[in-house]
Image (cartoon, rainbow, N blue to C red; front, side, top):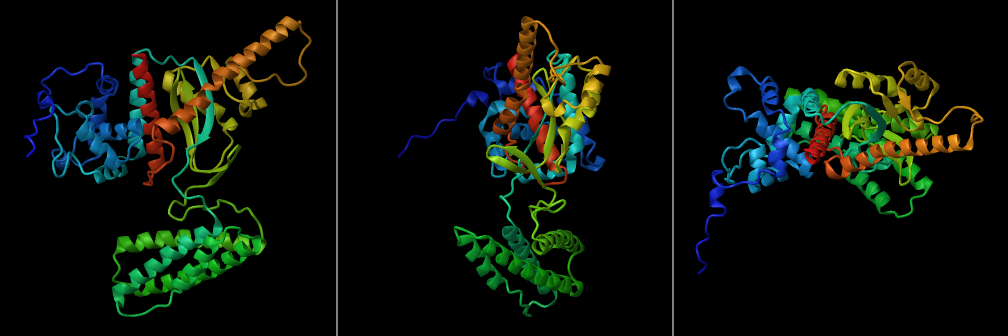
Length: 445
């Protein structure tokens, strides 16, 4: 027989023992404007639910912990019950042991993100920025600009795989709708034959252009047939719940758009199509051509980031590709809104060095480190060397934003965008930037 197990850390239940005041979670808790965010949080709920909803500090603390620890919804709830310091960060006055249900169910995090929306995260970013400014951690003199793509959590697309995903969904919904009015009836979707065609294609190691063309054409025919069948059963399925019908019709609209694009590619033998959809379940995602080694094309939202005194802010976020060099004037306005003044210096790569941007910076008397346009002037060798050294130094300072991008993606849960709710990409990136800024402030306080 094993001896009876003694209680673990009994002096911490409740917090009655000596705790480490220099623990990162305790120090981070002092940087977050909890009271302001609690008021904003409760504005999203009806007056009758104010007493029963989980408090805002707990939910915000869990979401921030996700970004700081790179954990999923389920994992951050587990971590909450394992770490008393993190419980303090989330506003608990006594240690909460894990019961059968736990402090919250992990699915509540997704529901709260959907209710709060991206506007809540934008307000949180502004409030944290005010805290950093009040502590004198961020001055707003030097502005560093660049853009990056945060990859969406989708499989690498190809035409046959995309059409097969559409076909599988359509076939599933055909049977689901048909069973609402004729459970014993039969409908021939040819899904088994189509699946054999797809699996044969996938198992072929070296896929010739002819095999790709023929398989894509077959999949197009299967999808056309299944879309017609789904439209027919939707007309007959009057007993289908309204919310379910709207959901199917929304996906059906996406399926038709994908089919239209694939027919265009097949009939014109082309390789390009406007607003190309690369993911059936995430149709907003677009291919962004980057031209980088190992990443010629990336799939996800493109973010324009402003770095000031080592702290990052989001200036723009779009799924479609855009030229970040044209966003300088907008970024200067954002900077003035945040700090009440224009920067004294702007550092960016040569994409921003357009004549329009040079003229804008000269009019505002803002320094920059762009290469001089035209033939270099005749000047003493020592003066020329001094200018080259200054240019290299400024470029070295600009490169700090490149390392920031890598740090954001590896360390702050932004390696892949996973939140698919409306505005979810803005929420995940915004919270990731806040987590990065708090982590940076933690090292300076």
